[in-house]
Image (cartoon, rainbow, N blue to C red; front, side, top):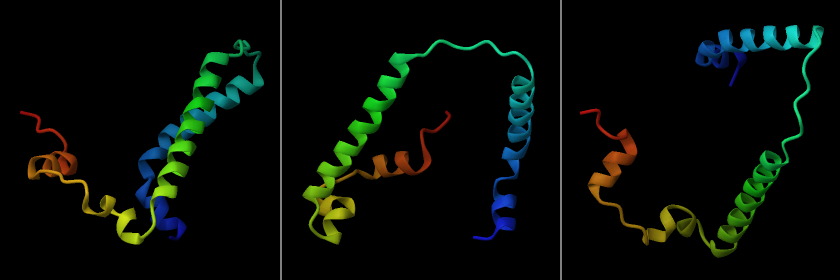
Length: 93
């Protein structure tokens, strides 16, 4: 993908990036208050990442063929209502 397609696809992010950059520049030049280290948030993030990696490793060990990788080898059945809900989301009315 070339950069012009990427730019046209994500043009709506540009104002947020500029505002964030301006705020970061202002904080870097002035005296900023230092936040205390949040060990709870850090430990929950690490727990989330490790648990995701463990689940991924466990699932990869159970997969033997391409057919098992996609749609759980046909063992998962989803009704038409659920397919519609997953594809479009809940209806507003």
